[in-house]
Length: 424
Image (tube, rainbow, N blue to C red):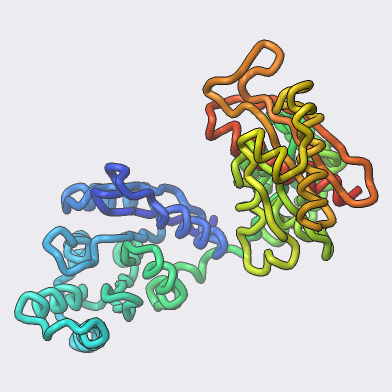
């Protein structure tokens, strides 16, 4: 049986939605990478009774490790360490080495910022952060808040206390999982692997039917933990399995590839962005966007080194910009409308020619909430793909949802259309 963990994210600002939880998903994925099953992620405010209730719940359901994030600061509402210590039946004791470490960090910061020396309140805050449960292992801080690792005892799970700021938590992670209390838990975890298939234009019902058939025809299917998720118009198939069951996973991939080979664009976890950039293979690209307003350009440049393949883009909302900057004939817009494949074709050709690239992608559409008609309803988007030496291709798709959803789905569609064209 695999090791199981529970995560408690603390902070009233997270509970009320003022700040989105970035720690729970990150810690969960990191634990999965270590072969640990995550049973629960809970969020509670900065109230000791509520945190205690979460700790008791996770202990009662039999997790082997509890990880908390947040509540380690110097202020009165930062009560995680004290609450966990009480839950574990441990007294708080001053760790003088951690106290000196935090003092050095803060004094360096004060000198660099030109602040005056701290007083009694600062000293009290440092002392509060240096109070560690007896017998626990302190983890040196990345910011000013140390982490704490407490070994399992008498049927109680091990507890790992981490800071709330994501940068501090992630910076502390490697040291935290190497502590003796956590390492003892991880020693019992299995040798698990997690693999991801990604598909586009594959419906969830069709995938569900294929998995139902695979259940009866793929040897070892029962040993695979399969999760499917529809995300941004794409379907992810995430499979977790013991390394000993790799043959069963390979058989599943072969089965799904035979059934949906045209829709599966990634069998190694690569995103469409990564697939597209690989397919460019040294070629350059430009964008001409109306309804997506630069979202495709943002996707293409969202990684270091993007200047090697992305030369520029035009967010051409106004018809005058389409005509003046991209060279779309005004009479073409009058004849067919701005949202048309004819205009999308001219936009793509204009972007490629004016920006001097090997390829270009264009979008023009009706993102809503207004502007639709019976012939061109809200959600209609026309795409153009222009590649040097090839006839320019156009496509019209209609997307569901509100304005933000239509724009996001159209952006993803553009990435796929361009990728498919570059592969051709």
